[in-house]
Image (tube, rainbow, N blue to C red; front, top):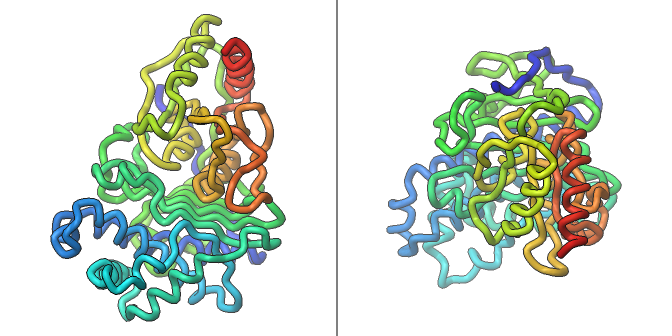
Length: 366
């Protein structure tokens, strides 16, 4: 069954959130160009820094620096950004090769960047996660997916009073064509974006350019952003699980038991979709899968806010229910971790309710 979506005009507003979204789109579009360029030249980057795993390090740092720079350029004033990376590694003289490669990568979106400017931009990522309002960023979510040439994401979200309110999720290898296999890298990619309460939209990652759409104007390369609406899941419809490639990211045994519990209750299932990163939220939001289930891998494990803020908001704005495995809303007011939550459940409301019941039975029996 093909996913169902609705195409409508994008309602650009004059409120501050619209300005934040415009800046976020420019920042993520730039970061997508940077990460795609590094991924396309990983062997060359690895030779420069003499480390096979360094391409993702270079792309991570360049992506974060470009996002911080782009936000400052467009918003001015104080920037409070809670990023995953710091500049400490690049400031170490022993890693001068990494710094040079990172600067070269950042030039894809920031042509006149210097080493000092890049390091200062990296330092912007050390913001206070307890501030009333701040941005949070994962410059490359899905490290192993990036290294194998698969799915990964650039995730940026503005959090206000503990609530994600503006989200931009760049999926540089995810095709806009819903019929394209999600495990096959696309040469254009997709960006998802939203303001809380206004629905979620998608456009090509290479359509963001240096000047994202505003005031109703279409992207430079043509075509219009389209709204993604996740319609209600019907009782007779089979469900598709979207899960990680890496088993370390979720408890696969418990996930299997939850899905088996649903099957025993007559809920039909298709073959699972396995991809890395917050692209899973996008795939569920647009209907290529129905369930994103992240069971904790160990007792006391706490999810990081930048691993979920943008993706969870985008899925919710499409009509997907997003909670932890106990059915509680995700609480982004606790600092860098979702310390009051356990795991993640994202699915259309009817399926979500079935999942919470199955999780309770599985954990109660375990």
